[in-house]
Image (cartoon, rainbow, N blue to C red; front, side):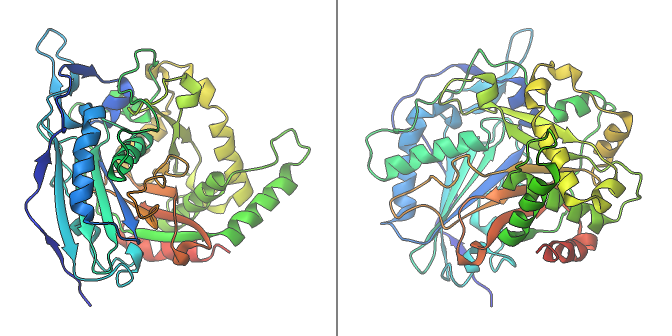
Length: 432
């Protein structure tokens, strides 16, 4: 059965509801490493509110008074340095409303296989190509026949990381509920005290030939639950293996889920045994660098776990968890290095240029994506999406779950091509 999504009108620009400051906001090296990368967060709300599109649009305009850089554009300086920055022009963010000819139950709350293409529920930049004149944020509110709705936010990663976007959306939701102003924190977009944070993307770019560019790859879509039975079993095995051995004997859900995805994917793509199969995961380092409360720009560190395909595919799961835990434990050490000193072997750089043998992973757990409440309660589900995929990517520990996902941890991935997706799903199905 096919279902239709109908846009109520063409996208329009939503401006701040009051005059906002002009001027330029500098971007950090972390911001610049993610500039012009777009991501989408789709939040599924089961319980209705009155006129969701109209109500949220009004609150969005009000929130832009406090978060006015979102209403600006990327620009370059006219001086000798010509440095890229955010120009606070107040041009606004893009907004569209839509209706779906079905209920959320009909489309299984966007669980796989998608009964509605996710791209119909969100505004897109067009082949994932952002430009200097593109809005920094776009929102679509789609109302379903059951009264539920989906709020899809697509944003330029250079303006905010996932934590920062969640902070902004919490402000929008508070204003939707009728609060006179956001209550969570005072928003801060520029923190002059922040140090340079080592970034894998930047390190690779410096060792790439002139003109090198990662190309879009049509990765298959995976939406899966890693069962609690598997997670708890591995946690128990880890405690048994390392108790009294001078190693912290407990491991986290993130570490177990990450290890499982990494091993299943490595097995599925069947690389040569001695080929590097590195894992890159991002870490929110706000607490490590002491940034100001309310900072919503990018504050992420790239952590790299190096191993061969054979070691990952055939290693004991608790050993792979240990590699990830050890790398997480070196975050503070990595922050003491300047950006230009991130060490990468020639073999790993070659893999990064080729792209497919690497896995990039981001956790959306505990960053506030589930704290958004427009008046009918928190989302039943949060789903990530990417318009342009250039490296194998995975989003773990997604917050919220409907009954279908109550038995484990939800993961959405774009990390294998169609040639390998059946084997990847088969490996994931073996997790018990």
